[in-house]
Image (cartoon, rainbow, N blue to C red; front, side, top):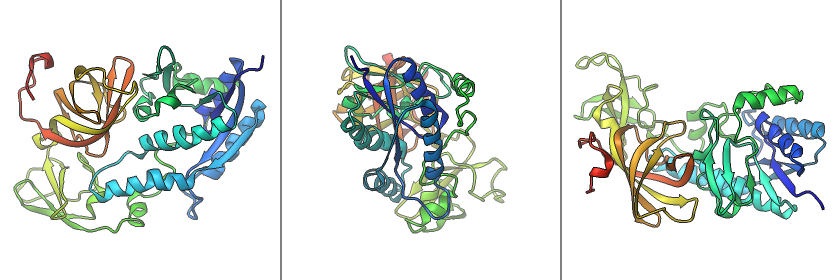
Length: 375
């Protein structure tokens, strides 16, 4: 009886390389698939060509075939257009979540299945339980867990996906690659999105969205300085404001507290934990539930409003199928519209949605969530 065919998304990095080797050890028939999502650029910031060569070398060493495919058109249509639209609206998007849903576990997943794959695998730090229904779990390495970015995966894809390194720590993966003398064993982890890479973010964004400089103001309307364009700033940001040394203000650092899109004004406050930076609750829309629906109309769980954040205890109220209200036990700092609120019950990822709006920190949160019965 033939071994089931697994096609592994090969990025040219250490994680996917070791994932492929682990699957070979488990008896699968393994093939690699290198996916590019961005047209080669002339300034050398996108590393896709070098990454493909690394993936090719690894696959040669492991003795497995490597396919190559480009989804640059689909990426621009389904991910990059959304990225620009969100910045144009003054929000701060996270395109990695959409890339996983629409590209890696969308069109690329379908492509791998057409190649005959029974399973698709990647080098993500996450785990999946397939029975009795697909459940997405955190990766065992808390510093590398990527379930936050995978919460919106289509259920049909999750049901046929393997995460071979999800039960391991990063240092263990590096050690395996070193022992195997894989050519990528000491390759630096990629950070961010290929189409931005290491290039200056403001310079990149200005090619697609015209910058509109304006005033920076305090909450009481004092003019503090000038901003280069609202799209270049995010809530809670400290660096790059250039408004220190105000004559009538303390020496405490300034932070971005809001954006007035109508007046093209950036609002700033002093102090890392200024009340204007704190929120008690938020509304998230475009909810994607791993199980297909919320576990209950109202339930308690934990949430992350940004990657790598510690789990925050909260109560979730379902407003409708696609929208929830999330109230936190402890006030949250710099909750940013456009980012994702992702929900967990212990190790299990329940799903998540796009942060639409927040409500300021105004109430006493010292009592347990369960005792608070009203909105």
